[in-house]
Length: 121
Length: 386
Image (cartoon, rainbow over all chains, first blue to last red):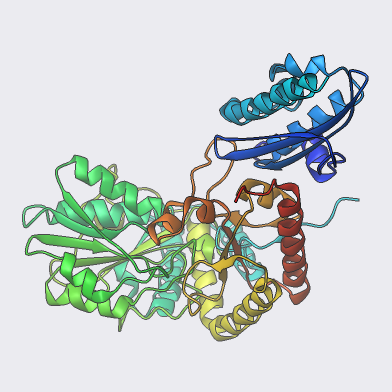
């Protein structure tokens, strides 16, 4: 039997993305590259991310990674977005190396969102 | 609770029929001899193989002696194309095939090109059908072999084998047909069709895996050089000890297919119609292939949906993508690209293939799951900038 390409966590996040959508009135960024599209939106309050949502056209790993990023960063400091690195999320979701380019697109979108939120202050 | 799996991938492989299993158990239990042995047990094994050849010959309308047992369609394709081309190399080195063929065919031609053969690839139309006039135009005085598949494994398109074969016969060109998706599912009468070489495999029509055959027409100039060496079995065309139980299973599968071909086709047409009716009104959906193609296959693409996510969202429905999509290979289907589909269309393609045991409930469930998956993934995607 060939190995399941998706971990249990990826399947869970893909099947039940609680953060899919758009934050109305929030800041949003759209990055399109590597054959995928990632849109992130967020609102901020007192230097922290009040709400964060995503929209993705891409593979299950990318959708799961976007959901994971929203779960991780919502309620946290805006500054964390700017220094986001893909390594941890790729490890947590067991993203295959050949999909690194797609996760880089997410990384770009997250860092870009951080810069835009910071500039609002 | 985990949902029950729904298998709609019969074009990839079929379950082994109960009668086939029974025959294989019977043969495996009663005879362990090498069919090449001349003692009584060996002769009994030979008789079992001869009976299976008779059953398969009856399905195809040919004499049992025209059949060579192989390990499956890939080996049959390799033997037919490489063996046929090499046998005729002294007469010419031009070969003709189509880009929508299975890799077991195209890769052999690529290998022969490295040996000094010249290969011309003919283009099908947007539905995947090959125009016999376009085929004829690609043939030359030095063309020695052409290979065109009967039923396309991705789209279900059925080629006009009679017209293409007639063109080859008129010019004394060896005509090979990959019949893996046709034999046992559609009437294939090689007593009538002008085919020189035909590949088939057991597991596509409810027989066992690991056994197939190559039909070699009994006519002058129709021969193949072996690609395996090591014994004199099967007229030295394909040496190796035959797996008596698998051969017997394939023979029984042919028997069963002969008996129920018409009812099977009616059943497949009904299930395919129910499935297509359940999804045809989805915005941006495209049928890949000919609407009058093989009724066991329905291949569709849909706009604005990513194929790998669609495949996962369809679970527990087991289908195939047009893109052989997995984490290691995300190339869009070369077959769908060859019939003019865009990368995005080819990447979102799903091949549903129904079989004998497929129920109305299963296809309605699959249609519903497909509709929901498309809607969910479209909701999830960012809007495309105008």
